[in-house]
Length: 245
Length: 316
Ligand SMILES: Nc1ncnc2c1ncn2[C@@H]1O[C@H](COP(=O)(O)OP(=O)(O)OP(=O)(O)O)[C@@H](O)[C@H]1O
Ligand SMILES: [Mg+2]
Image (tube, rainbow over all chains, first blue to last red; front, side, top):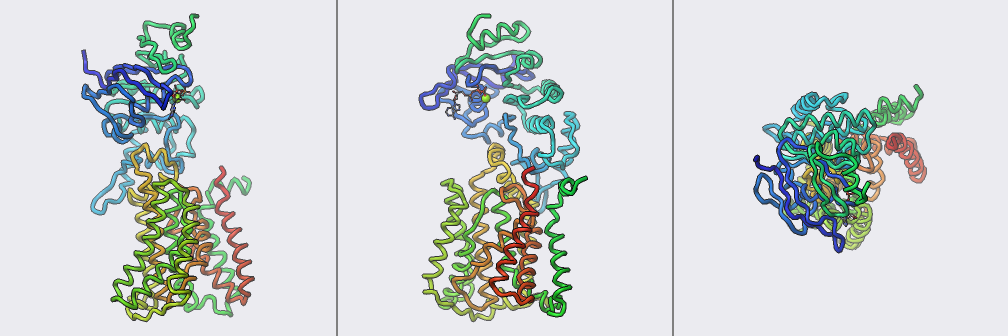
């Protein structure tokens, strides 16, 4: 069996008295898309934040490529090759696309260490072309872009920097039909890069279209993990709600 | 296309400062021709008089771009000028320069500490320190003015010339050049803009947001320190009122120059033009023979119009 990229064992997270995640365990393998589903407040975003270093688990272990790790903040996870596409995208709206692509990791040139804007623009253009994110130009300002284009930029940025794992928190929640389809294509194409993807979504149709496995959370409890090909919507709905259908 | 649509399409608010500058210049050039508005002497005078405000404007562009504001320069300028003047009376001149700059930087760092790590809003912090340091400036010398007589100092920061160009103009050029390069072409400048644009995005991208906030306020303090030295050099004395009247002018210059009040967008060159525009206005109104009170009213109204024109598009 191949080595897992990410392995979570007995993760537990409480905010004061509120248990947000209880005994969660999951392994992610290269080239795999795992969907995380559950009702509002089930703990999906909390889990994403634990993996991305924003929250520290109260107990449990996180392994990356088999080595135990613990991130003190989001920068630590980024350096380890984990990228996140947050629900609100975390883009700087008044800055151009290329500056967002390199936010916090701007390229500089010798001898004065000034920004290498040309290279950042060229690299950005290359990347969006490769991923077929259609934007007017790498110099376009984010707020002049459509929701789908912005989402494309956020995902392209994650793709560019992720070497191991991409976490997507409801990447199509705010998008129309056509834009959702574009983003799904994009996510699908990432599979070939041999990184793992963990995606949170409320759309079961989407989950069934994209994922290899589905992990169900209910009020912080891990209800189960199913192979997408061997389950159906009714079963997943029953797991999410706890009711028989 | 409606005028509003044209206004938006070509982002005219980005250029309003240049248009306004040219319009006001032409207006004064015609109406005040006989009063000598366009004489070399008068135009040079405008340049010399705006130097401290331009330096202050540079700092403010950084602060506003990072989503913060500094109001305390209104009194930090006086504290810096007085510190330099007082130290000059007892120690060699270089210590006076250090004291002036150091006082400004200290005010800025104090604001920065409160804003960055205690997360107090910079508007309130710097409003409070504006008052605090205005009081300190008054007690420092019991409201007395301190003469500045060191020839090197008054030449270097005031009346001197290098290659035929007045030192105050040099300070303006150097300040703008450094400010512009740092703002537009360094990682620090990019991080300032990102912080003001979307602090959370900046933070999850690994940008040390508190450090950026601390830095921009410290830069404002440093600019206030330099402005204090320039005033002391030009006027050959320091008093507690220095910088007081710059508060409104500098904020107006920066906003008119295309810097957003709520962060993420700005221009150093725009701030320079804005500052020159304010200086020209001041000069023109005096040449027109307006009473001080009338000058204040007209200046206030013009600033209102200019600011409205440059802010129009932000609700899009
Ligand atoms: N920072 C926090 N402090 C306290 N409680 C929190 C915090 N973050 C999350 N919680 C709690 O943890 C639980 C899980 O929240 P979480 O945001 O992970 O849910 P979710 O599954 O992402 O829901 P949604 O589908 O609505 O996004 C909720 O009860 C929430 O109130
Ligand atoms: Mg959530």
